[in-house]
Image 1: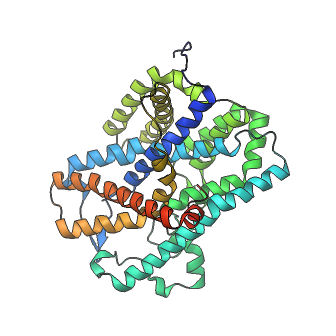
Image 2: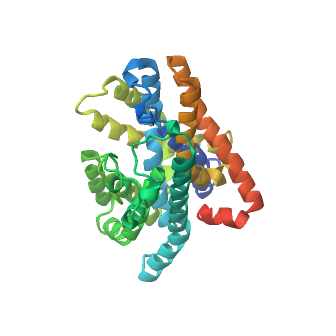
Image 3: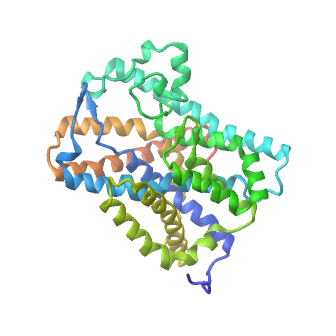
Amino acid sequence: MDKDYHFKMPEDKLQSMTIDFLRFPLIVGVVFIHTDFSDIVMAGAKQISFRDYPIFSSVFFLFSKVIFEVCVPLFFFISGFLFFYKTAGFSTEIYLQKLKNRVRSLLVPYIFWNLLVIIFLLLAQTFLSGSLVSGRNKLILDYSLMDWLWSFWDTSKVNPHLNKSLPINSPFWFIRDLMVVVLFSPVVYFLIKKLGTYAVIILGLLWVCNPFFYLPGLSTVSFFFFTAGAYFSINTKNFVISMRPMLGIVVPLYVLLVVAQLFFLGQSWWADLYCAGIIVGLVTVVSVSAHFIDQERWATNAFLANSSFFIFAYHRLPLVFVIKFLFKVLRPQSEALLLFLYFASPVIIIVLGLLIYSLSKQFWPRFTAIISGGR
């Protein structure tokens, strides 16, 4: 660790610029995570088996299941940091004001984008060819009142075959769990004030013991990384300045952990490598970004950064239909074509999303701001 490292720009500015810079690349990673061909079902038939395509399977696993897995934990970390950023104390008044702000930035977009997906699914089930829908899910027209309510929180209650408790706009599990941890923010503040780093360590151990623990609104990943980010804010520590000197250590260590995850896939202790990879990967992403931003070799593109929430909110359903359409037209049966589709599908969705966001912002700026949480 280079303890004598000197930064060119002011520390607070570097931290702010690093956060802004990371917003778009992290969303790109989220889109890739959801570019999953393992369960593509059209007209009740599964399209491919990963066992038949070992090269594609390895590339998919490398990016979507290893490298980009750091994106969501880092978003929780940044959310926790920003929630308590420059907050003097934590009174009832401050808490209520923060909740009010999160209604605008989280709850309103959450309701809008989930409702929009319900409407689009209704239209797709009604008018699209049966070959482009899975045929496994309950029709929207058959929803009861409780089905409508559950679709905003946990669609496995509506479609029991689903093995994850997700809202109907599935990426919004992040917003759902973030809203829950925000409600518990006084507890997070109290634990950090009373226990300091031990609060982070205890929650970290709970996450390591069960990194894939997800109940609707309650997940170990959300509470641990939100609290870790909050720890820096509450103790007025600059996390970029803390992590940047680790650059020389974490980069080679992260490469080793990525290789180990690929090599030891399927082992009983693989989850431990996964957790280590997430933590070291988080520090790697922050320290590398801060280094190149401080060297003025990387800079934030304001349009891309501002579009990040919109891309996140809109991408899932169009991505599913683009993948299914390309599979229907191209019928991929080779490693090369599958790899092409794996990289082409997210690019199509992201470029299309940027175009829609640009037009929406140009013609309906207030509406776009509302559905993007004021971002």
